[in-house]
Length: 295
Ligand code: AMP
Image (tube, rainbow, N blue to C red):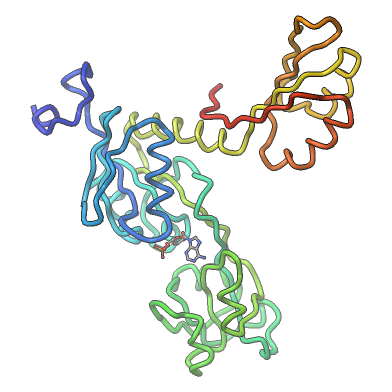
């Protein structure tokens, strides 16, 4: 049996278990966070060497193939792999026949139209007939609201206006500092992108299951588990501060008149909540990461 001969099944797994093949970016900014996601999902990826083309996972019948992020939509579409992690911008640009199984919460960036600071253009509608340098020709044509002349470039797109090759660019932006450094200003966001797990239109059940596991990790990363002690008569004020999606747990303490309050809170709210909780009488506050959120 091929799977067991390749030695990738965990001890005790049924011999016939199918190995799920997932494509992971081989380099670039999505590679490390994608491997970290496999780790946080408990799959136990073996650390790939710099030249590795594939690596197994210790805890699950999953094999990761390291592939250029740009090629991953085609690999998934053609069934070379069962699913893959890449940027949503790449998925849309390649126009592959794949389905988005799960957004992954990293690699966030926007595809934007930008012009030289001194340009008269102020919005994408102004770009009628303009020469647009981009390595996203399909998206530029589909998402700009007016007809344009494409200048297909690969890399250093921001230089094209300065070289007189283009009037504007369409490129990915995260902090905006590359645009500023090159004397460009954004005139519109065309697409919001982040890393996504994709599969074929009819994904294998194991790929759908993996998407659920990833979702539990992605959701948990945005939350913190908050524990605090408070006098009983402060409970209403404290619960009003941390309503959460469900009611907080209130547990009696051995000290008379004192309770412990436990709640899930969005990580982004912590900085604002802490002084408010202390002001409401909370003490012994603990904030801990959440590994998974299910159900
Ligand atoms: P890389 O392989 O490093 O060129 O990155 C490829 C993918 O990373 C892009 O297609 C995006 O999905 C994502 N990404 C996130 N932020 C940026 C950014 N500021 N510039 C380019 N790509 C980005």
